[in-house]
Image (cartoon, rainbow, N blue to C red; front, side):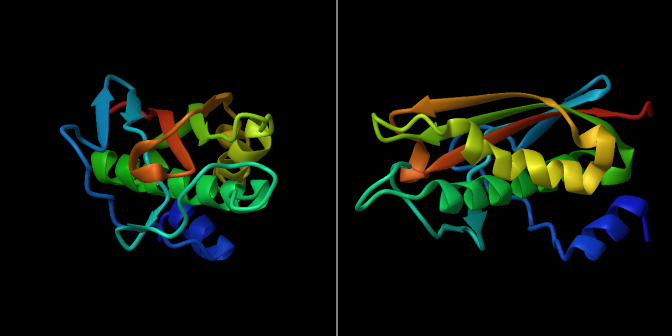
Amino acid sequence: MSSIAARLAELGIVLPGVAAPVAAYVPAVRTGRHVWTSGQLPFVDGRLGVTGKVGDGEGLVSTEVAAGLARTAVLNALAAVAAEIGSLDKVTRIVKVTGFVASDPSFTGQPAVINGASLVLKEIFGAAGVHARSAVGVAVLPLDSPVEVELVVEVAEG
């Protein structure tokens, strides 16, 4: 068992299958030593379990729930990376996370939401999982998803 596979097992994390694109793109592209993922939604078994805007109040997705969705989305991104390069053991660094949060106009907690993605990357990859990041509030995301996450990772030569 590879070291990242062992770490995932230790954390009780099972990477999902690669989410099917919902439009005309591919889940990930490698160029040189970097893999760029397309924006990944928090699909579980091909479905969004939660939809809507993130914020505080009736009918909105809470920060805590949205952070869990960001975690799910970044695991989907890792699945796309693994499919592109064959093994997550080839990842030498998580370079950048870009997180989008479909936000109620008064919501300003986007960084706390995207921490759901950032923290699990650090759990999985240790120091190599600490990354640059953007957490952006947007009016709406595809399929009314509350969050979307993109990754840029560096991989070993070859």
